[in-house]
Length: 200
View 1 (tube, rainbow, N blue to C red):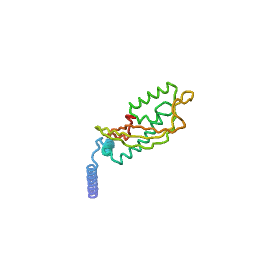
View 2 (cartoon, rainbow, N blue to C red):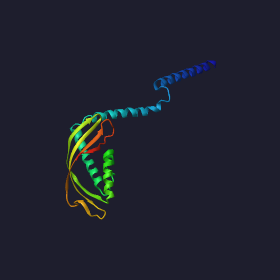
View 3 (cartoon, rainbow, N blue to C red):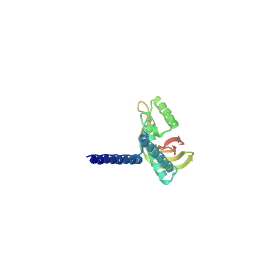
View 4 (cartoon, helix red, strand yellow):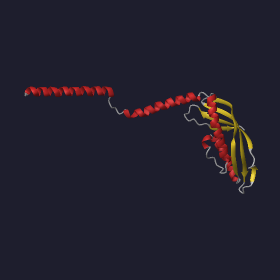
């Protein structure tokens, strides 16, 4: 009887030793919990953010033919958006606000307030952009400026509060010529360009 008890104690000790060995192995593999585990996701996000920034920077440094073609597609849309927003009948800048830097926005806003104070409003039908060509592109520090020549067709007129035509012709297509300068910070992850100058 005492011999069987001895074997039972030995079995218990062996099991305890095996359990302790497994625990130590798991601890060595998995590591201790130190309270740092929760920071791993945020660190991963920071790494991914830096990788994305580096990729964007490399893309921005190359304003090759492909990049220029993509830019012109967006520039045509921006041009129509700005022209239509400025020339509609509410005398307010709304849909194109994000496309304008503060200086251009303030210029447009002053002109629209003056138009509104006279009791005038505009009407416009945008026919389309005939052509958009890059006149020049220049990088100054991190800022890339691109000058674009636009030729477009619109139907537009200005009416007074009695709906009488002050200028323009609501029945005639007018060809317009503009030279605009767009700009963006090439180090920014924001891909959007802004209108920073109107030359003609």
